Image (cartoon, rainbow, N blue to C red):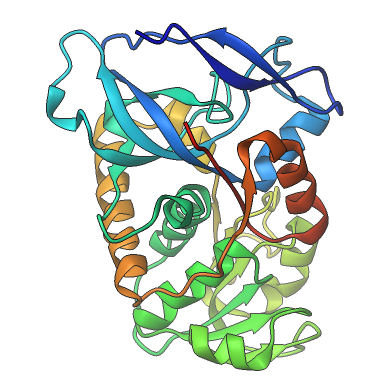
Length: 314
């Protein structure tokens, strides 16, 4: 019986993580122990390691995304998931995915399609579920024009969801290639902010100030969905254009979401992964690092703004 495992541990704000041996956690009621096959690296990971907004204790194990095999279940927990390959998005306040094993909640995992490799699946949870939350914020109106700012991992998934639902998608991005944008379903790419629009909705990943400057492009009763930060005060005077403001914070669902919300989100995530597995949802191939090089994967994600995944070989 394995009693210890290797985990990357927090050493203080702005410091590199240290790889150490620690006790293997035991699942409690409603929990699963997952033997990780691959770990997804996200901006939230290196941002929290750099700035430590949660005041983690030394030795805390960061990491929100992972894919692995369920090897143990907690007391009173259904054993149906034993041996299953699952993907998960973990809460920031608990020891996370940057380890050989991770404790997760049984109600917060997604079964990975057999045809979807672990490294690809590990690149999905955070950006995939964030994109789905953003997409779900607005009514579906066939043919309505929407503007998406920034074309990182989240928005590359989001524009495909929007296009597939019948929206006319425009993008504001200085980096995405015209052909790639077209392949993702984007009808028009702006390199500088447009000066006129009449958009039904704005999806912003460039920050609140950038989003505020684009609100005048919205129709009356339009929508702003903020993926990075949020607009604190409405731009328009009360009872004028009546713009609706939405904010996205996937991690907050761990603290404030209920069981029904998690059940719906996990089912939606499984359907999304099936789209990736069948090729109907396009995904940039992540850069893959070995487990021993996890700090390098964090640095790559921070500097290159490209998805990184860490693979494990037990």
